Structures are given as C-alpha cells and as structure tokens.
Length: 254
Image (cartoon, rainbow, N blue to C red; front, side):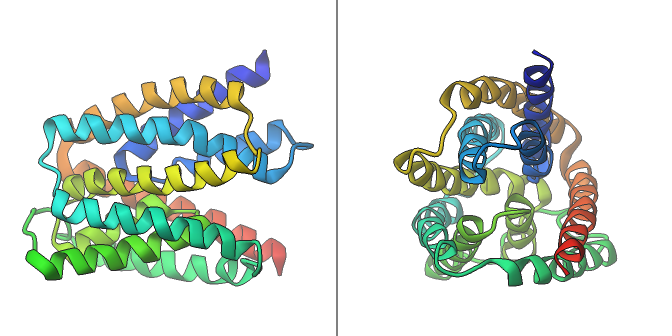
C-alpha cells in the first residue's frame, strides 16, 4: 500500500511538471525502478508511457481550450515524431545508447546557458515561419525529437519547448502547448511498441494515469495563470535538474 501511495504521488508530480514544461519522467521513472527493482526495465518504461500518455493528452486538451495552438506546426511535427519514435525504438535494440548518455549533459548545459543569457527568449509570441517552410521545419524537429524519444528519451519535452521557442519564435506558453501535442504522438508510438511486445503493467499504469491527469490539469492551470515567465523559470529548473541527473548517470558509467 505504501508503494502504491508513493507511485501515486510520483505520478501526480510528474503530470504537474510535465504539463508545464516537460521532464516529468525525471520523477516517475526513478520511483518505478526503485519500487519494482526485479521487473524488466522495458516493462517499467512501458508502464510509465501508459501513465504518461494520459497525462500529456489531458494537458494538450486543456491547453487547446485556452491557448491558440499553432496546429500548422504541431500537426506535421507530431506526425513525424510518431513515425520516428518507432525508428528510434527499433534502433536502440540494435545500437547501444551509451554515447547519448555521455553527450546529453553537454547539450543540456548549452541549452541552459543560452536560455539564461537570453533574458527575453520566449517572452513574446512572434512566429518566425509560415507556409511550406514552417511545415518542413516542424517535420524536421518532429523527426529528430521523435527518434531521440524512442532511442533514449530523457528531457524530450524540455527539448521540444526550447526548439519551438528558439527556432519558431513562440513564447514559452505557446511552445509548451505545441510540445504537448508532439509528446502525445511520441508516447503513443512507444506505447504501441511496448504493448505489442507485452511490456506493460496495465493496472498499475492506469492507476498512475489517473494521478497523472490530476497533476497535469493543475500544471496547465498554473502555466496559463502565470504565463510565459513562469514557464521559463520552471524550464530552467527542470533543465538544471536534468543536467545534474544525466551528468551523474554518465559519471557512473565512466
């Protein structure tokens, strides 16, 4: 009972953080692994995806009701992410992801430094692209991040937010809304793979999904109430934690 309570709190917290700026997996996945140490990692990841897709979808719907989502960016990016998440999941069964563990902290440090230095980054929603250029760039981002999510995964939501702010000129709130749509596609793709291969704890995943949805609804309300400045601050906190976590993981492997 204690374990289920801890997992419920972790799922709620993950849903809340993920709804604002991504990175909920930082909370949920370690708790799953520590609670079910004898369960296959693929099964725990699949269970996390099952809970996560409900939380992310709830956040996407909540954003869509209150924020104007740039569907001309979100739709092609989500489609490409769905396809390439499959490719990434397949690739990781053939090629070890060890080099990503080594590289990731440096990429995150660069993202954090750039965001800290650009105080005005993401404060104003001023889209930079339209038409075919917008769609092609969206497909490119969706393909790259989708592949990354299937192949490795940590920080997917935060990377999406940063790229939509930096490359598309969205504010942090608008970028977070679009990122949720793309994240749903990534999660669905991975979930289909895990479900097909039997790596799911359905009852546990659905229990955590309820908690994720509750957290995501509160997270989206906080984001929309406090605006892009709040999302930017949370983004920097999450990226900093990601840097510490991934650096420690890389150090352990060295």
